[in-house]
Image (cartoon, rainbow, N blue to C red; front, side, top):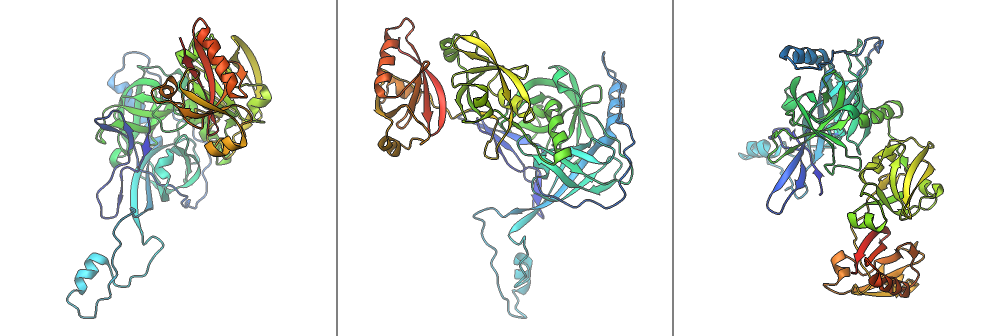
Length: 524
């Protein structure tokens, strides 16, 4: 499902507040919105001058609450960590909506009775244009938290995405102009820097990997501009994918959070930050106790890179992957559907140099199981370049271990490994017409020039098994089973063998516009 991010809780001067939402269609009759909690603005502002403090203060400490909790215990925890939670205020300009009616420009004669009317509704006549004359000013609020005594502040990227001025307001009311140290749109994280005149209270990241469904949590932030608001609840679920980016791994919580909570901390009962509140699931923009937080296990490494380098470098493997289905797993004699199926390997990539092949199933990476296909991009991205990592792959019915030297993702690479477009396919008595891969067929059907072998699908019969699987004209069948395809006759022979076999199963590798994917056919 697709998720669309828009601005929220930002407003133009003199206008009513709007809402920033993630729109998530869930069925044919109603659209439910996923509201990102705070309106964003981005850009670098100015840091206040002043002598930097000596970072000598200690991180805030709290006692763990292990047993039945009393109200005083929770109050003590909130009182201890609240001084390190900040409100964030941003100012920026947004382009006027496309299609908006232009403001007419009039020259009113001196003494005209209509002079006051035009000045009131259209501004002074012949007013000088400014760089922002076609843009609206907006003001928005968000949340954040201090992670060092000298003024590093964590928040969401969407909070400061379009900001021209950023102010950080501390719990004691002091306000500081902030600059952006670095940001990472793919994980929606940003790191700000302020220059306080004294060491600040700060809090530390905890280990979100140890957090369990049912654990109690506390969220503190700036909902609707009401700073220093605390809510409590439990962890409702782990590993949520809300389709907001390639590395989604959200903690779901039921603690009420609203627009303006974006970038605020999610605490465990030890007073450690185990998440950064980022989005809510809402049919109407209000809170329905389904919120999402970026886990600290992911945020900690991103923030460390932003602090040291100002940007994030991710590991790169160089494979296209797809999800395993039960049919695919059975065709490969895999005992389960866990793992990531390699649909193609980029030439001269780290995976190619390590001996990864098309058709391999990656079962683990760097000692971590690849339970779901989407686990692999996140695991690869967390590894620094030039590190040698071991991974387990399934090939020809056996598990084997490979060592790979992880590379750095090129600018053009969107993910370390990604899921290709859905392109299921079929073969045989499948209702297909095939042609050899020639210069003429490449040109006619737009086949990628890099493909060196295969059979081109030139027609698909309506209602056929191939059509049901989604095969199209221009798709190229590159492999059937473990054998590469060089001409249409090989496809026919493979289909005939499968039809005569005991299970009638056929495994194809199909390429569409440079994206490869495995599909299964049942010819029984």
